[in-house]
Image (cartoon, rainbow, N blue to C red; front, side, top):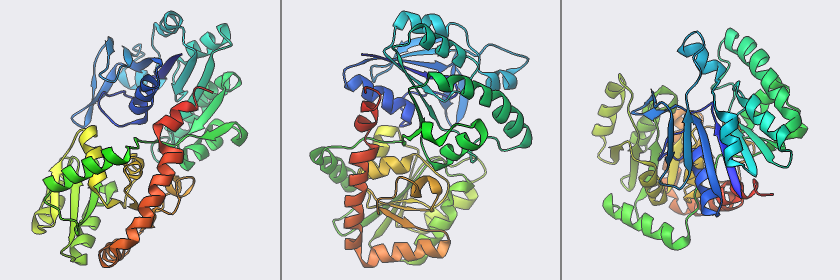
Amino acid sequence: MKIAHVGLASYYTEGMTYQDNQLAEQNVRDGHEVLYISNAAKYENGGVVETGYQDLMTPGGVRLVRLPYVRVLNRFVSGKLRRVTGLYPLLADFAPDVILSHDLCYWSVRDVLRYKKDHPRVKLYADTHTAACNSGTNWLSLHILHRMFYRALVQKALPYLDGYFYVGAGEKAFSRENYRVPESRMEFFPLGGTVFSGEAYEEKRARRRAELGLGPEDLLLIHSGKLDPGKRTEELLDAFAAAGAPELRLLVLGSIPPGREAALLPRMQADPRVIYLGWKPAEELLEYLCAGDLYCQPGSVSATLQNALCCGCPAMAYPHEEYRDGLDWGQFLWVRTREDMRAAIEEAAREPGSLAPLRQRALACARELLDYRVLAARLYR
């Protein structure tokens, strides 16, 4: 089978654990020929860089073609219109059996729809990652861009779709309220991760825990990401310091944005139980998650949480609707305040056995819902 992913509204970046990468690479592992069509930009050193046109094969076996946006007035407007040239001929040459459009909010979705009309047997799916927390954050964006321009594109696409997927409750609400997508047309398709075999998990866990100097009695908490204020890293570090249990370790992985060093580095350096390793590539991050006993996400929503669950690591998290609606299988410790964090950490230290059933529920959720092998199979139906 030939599967085309069209991701002109986001920045495909090789080597990351985003859905775009993992789903396409899972399609390859399942034996399919895969084309990913992206815009001509990617993340690099915490920012977005232009790449220009590219046609290459990724290490994961995905053919990646980057198409630059057509310039309209300026870069800002071009980045909102998202129009490219050459999309229809590229699809026609590849002749996909399945197309997954990552979002529908780009002008050139019209080429995807034209291809579907010309080839009605092709399965066409779309997903949405757009929610109030990341889009429509000012009046002009919400009312002009999303409720007029993008709504028109989504409504134009709906009659041709074989499935409209949302990755979380916030995305579902945004599509319903701003694009007027009926709930009856939407399906839950969460961000997922890789579920390792028991042998592979144990090997990664033992190796990374030995590297960190951990004994069997030590409990490892993990916190990761771009450590901006929304992550609430300072509050987590303060709560961890207040807990004071000597058998606890807190591993912090991620980049510190400019201007945040003074708030974070002294807190980390003051507590010998805190290990800060900086940013790590996706493959290494997954291995550290296998080594962990509790993933700490008390702030903003992050896709790393799903990866943690797939690595058998339950989560201490803020009760965002995105987590409570669909992902809550009893594997969470919900926290709102710094005192909640301290209490949860102290409870884990006092009763380490209490984390074992949470780990089993995390793995059950991962195997049935979050495993990209399960998610990818939904495109083959």
